[in-house]
Length: 51
Image (cartoon, rainbow, N blue to C red; front, side):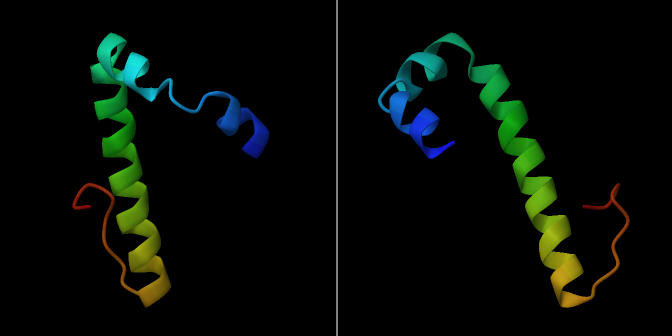
């Protein structure tokens, strides 16, 4: 997987220009999942709709 990532190094600008909406959607998903994981680690139960 790291080799695949390295092979695409420098191409992120191209993706940013072509599909900014896709990156926004991925960023939103990552933020929600990160918040959920953090809450689970701390033992906090929060409904997904609230996250």
